Image (cartoon, rainbow over all chains, first blue to last red):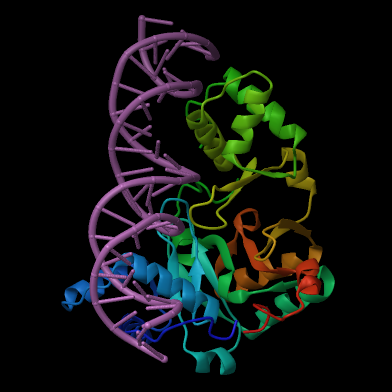
Length: 148
Length: 148
DNA sequence: TTGCGTGCAAAGGTTTTGCATGGCA
DNA sequence: TGCCATGCAAAACCTTTGCACGCAA
């Protein structure tokens, strides 16, 4: 890797500045574009796609593809938290569509188990558990979709 | 649910017949379409999309969205295995792109933990762990992408 | 006969690519 | 100056929708 020609452009700086203000929140390309429009700045969506891809490579940003046709979901995490923070997975509720953080030490044992027993190195930043959240389970009165 | 007007059509039967011959394997809509073309039968892709959606609802088929722009990945599992088989998650190698089965009793404790501690009911049929498989780790000599 | 399923064509939406221009080093 | 980044327009791609026709019940 080692900086294979990554210029430090105005757009990169402004994007990173903004992302640091919404750390841990979920967003898509359109959200970013709208934000800069609303403050009178324009950054082309192509550039946003390319810069986010670059940040995904650098490990600053996580990218989640939740369903076909809908835009990819991103999340920024600062380098500090990377080192000090514990493992964080995500939960995606298939009923209400929310993407939920799940930070839990016990879950690091999952990664360890899968590494030792299945020879696979899990990347928690990209992994999403699909299912149904508590509120949607409680809302559900007819039992539809919950037990198949 | 309960059969909300689901006719038993020729296309449905032929699709299910074929799926039972590739149980446990991964495929996309294009694969199915190509298969029927190659045996002289035509099933419109629209129909394949709709029938697969139906089977996902019925729990016969799992659907995985692996990355934006690329087609969704499906897998058929017969109803018998559903009942007797243990929990099966999937691993997706981000280097070689393979989708790997991971059947393991210990993993059911993951679901239990997330249910009890996080109030979230995980659906293993839709959940994919992203990471790097053993072969790709061994192939990797430069260390790129493996430790960020 | 009623109503759903089918399949073609077209639309919808996200993401990628081509290319001329502009900015960083 | 050289090379990469930018951003507009257009393409590429998967998936969904509209609609007339056909088939299952």
